[in-house]
Length: 458
Image (cartoon, rainbow, N blue to C red):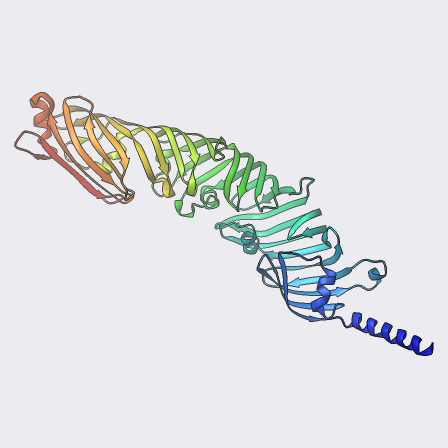
């Protein structure tokens, strides 16, 4: 009998020693519910005081992990440990409890660089500043919060796409539908915004009743067009918008106004202010209407956000004074006056609002020759299309006035080239005399006019 008790005692001592000196490589599995997204490596220490040289979530290294297993909760059948993660990407600490519903973190606090948070949310715009926050309780299963209570975050010295945002504050809790819901608002900086947000398990971001006033450069950067060189400010309200994979709008409803609208290719004197409405289209895209006011040109169209963030316009009308063509023409004797009207069945705009596809017509009303041989030459029509190399090409003709026009043109973002043959319809001597002033006279009485050059050069 005595031998039996000795054996039992030795077994108890051995079991106690095994538990007490249990290596961390086994201990972390005892403390944490297995996760497909969390990986620990370079483990050392024991189950009671363990260390991981690296902890990664979704293959993203966050830093080093240290934990201390509490003894008293074990007597109550609970597995509770204090933990801390320290690294360049993330610093966080709190209490971890393993439960059937996931890993629960209580009294959680954290801090991380804004660029790390942007990478996690797949936001491509450059983010600067630091984010710090806390949560009373957070339960995570397979890398996603299934329960969250009293979450708060504060983005200090916030800067996004080189735009200062001041301080951004958010509050959030777990919603009944499994999403993370909250509110966001900023104070100070060069932009203002305030609204409700919802983050989904798919990492999609939803904004509701979101009012904003942003520099146009920030808005285009968020839409994946950082090289558009947009100027002015954009303000409006997003009644609803859903951003997939960080920044691509999948659903939207609201309105906006672009004040002093301008890009690298279009001045604000030309556009003035642009108003737009938008909603989710039947095919799942974003579509709406737009028009401008206060500029030298007038534009109205239906629009849709197409593939690659291209702006596709249909049923578009355009009107602007012909004086805007003066830098392109520069022909002696030609008086650049009248108006130019346009109608486009299709117009696709990409970076800098330069057309990548176009199908439509422009009509210049009231082409005249000035000076002693002044004459009204009638109206000129330009039919426009897109060349496979991306340039805009077209045919120049007339609408049956005293001037007969036949020509072609080609233009790119940086240059233009046009050649036109002009002749007096019906042999009108006044028109024929006027044409001799503005081009190279031909033996048949017509005139060849050529114009070419680079935009922005005199």
